[in-house]
Image (tube, rainbow, N blue to C red; front, side, top):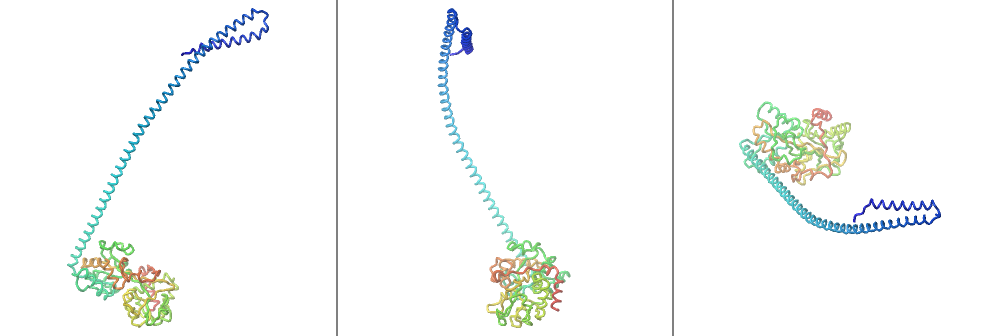
Length: 469
């Protein structure tokens, strides 16, 4: 039903105006005197009421029609909402199924990708491992080939002439025989000359004169590091170089450390009891040892001279000078080597002395020589030296020389060094003379005073003056 909203509005306004007019008129005329006027007014009112009633009926009819239409629309809306909800539910259900399928497909895809990545990583790892094994095998083969080539080249040369630092009997009785166990084709006797400063001077003279000289220099660290590098050939391909710490490697690969030589105080146990033994380096200046002390001469500036020089920064100049003067006042006996000093104390000619630890470690059980480990300040022992070895750049037998140096730096060669009683440089060698198995727990080793090497003339002159030599 369509309602004419404009007509309805006009009718309502007319009724209201009529009602207002009636009210206004009644208020104006008060009590009318004639019935005619009243009748006329009642007629107008009745007519207005009739019209109004008709309009109200019409409006009621229209309202009913609107309510019916609204009810229909409400029913239709509910149906539409229900249909929309059903459609939405169906769509969501379908989307849910599709989403689950998509998630499952995505998960499968990711799983396949992960498997592929894992397979690739495993393949890459396997390839790298294979490449590493191949490289290692090739390196080993190259080393073997190089070793074989070095051996074959060495076989065509004479045994190298060695100007060495260790005692000749140790070389000929231990080191060379062990070398021949590895290379039975080597001559029965090695060529070895023992010596220190005089031998180095001889080498330099021979080298500069262009005459036959040593193929190998095997000397203490100071002269090797300061005097000898210009005479040595690099040997970077030495097969066992990676077994040693950087601190023992020469920057130009011209020399390698063979052993360490700590210096210690020793005493004859037949002449001195443990309670009477020295407890400090300063005891060398105790008057009770007057005429009873022996050690290697400080002339030539070798390992015993280094003991005294290394103590200088520890004691300070004044205390050090007093210590050396008191030691000199005891009239010590000077020997040509540390081993000679050891032998003289062993023989009972002197009660105490300074020795390199190798002589004591090499002695048989029951030998009446003991180490007097310091228990009082200055507490510690000094490193007589590191010993180093290198091949001369003008060696007449360079391949045999390299073969010997390489063998000496190998675990087998280092065990041979240990057999001489010298602590081997290779820390992994199982040897009873390894310092960790010998020294008291916590016993420090004094550092080398660099001026011993950089200003040797100055310190040798000081020692010679203080000892009155």
